[in-house]
Length: 311
Image 1: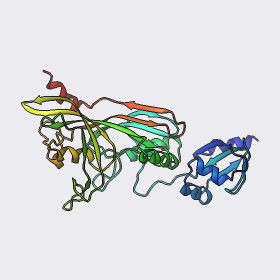
Image 2: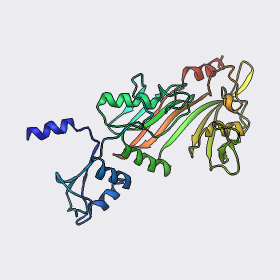
Image 3: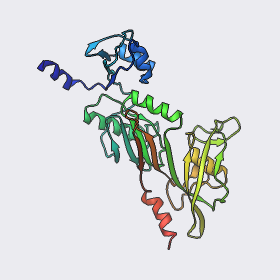
Image 4: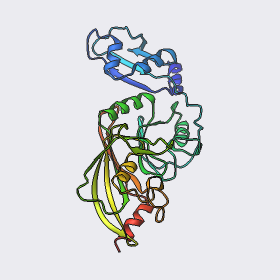
């Protein structure tokens, strides 16, 4: 017996437990109800996972009895080729066995790119997982542009990523941002609904275009102010869709580019990045269903613009 407990200490595979509630239901059907994806079942079968019922290995055709204890062990995850494991500072707001919520600094990529292959959040998260002995890779749930700061959510396993993906598609993950834009935004701008697509002359730039994807941003004006005689507006934004550069493109489209956002017509005179920060993230916990809300305050560089205007 002591041998098997030794073994389980070594086993770092992500494991979930369920209790069967329907007499005679096939394991496969129960797993579908518990939102285990087909892809995950294939991986469990072929890549070193395990399904047990009352501690006995079973296949998906096994009929369950009410009260049966089902254990799902997912295979260890492989990191993608380009993702180097690095160790460094992460500003952790919340962490449990399923998710990790971070405060991302400006000027740091969420995932590695050709221009910035190292020091991304994903690289550091892989290092963090390695220190925890987790056989997992970084699954980004809510991505932020390199120069956008604020709350960022990461799933600690592919199955959790699958669950948060379902939640995102049904609008159950909600994010609020604050931004500082050029000019005084008219009080009657409350929602911007305009499709966004790739600009033909650029790989990076996006624009509002008829053949783009549906995009919806809500805008709340927090305060009009002047910074060194220049009119600016502090706004709060809620995303209903998650298009690339959505807030930046939408605000430029209505004539109020983000301060510091050179790509979309903003000026870098007062801040060396787009003045955009994810201040709040609301979601239900993917495993427990518990309602979670995280908030955090603006970075110093944005705060400085707002504070100096109060003088």
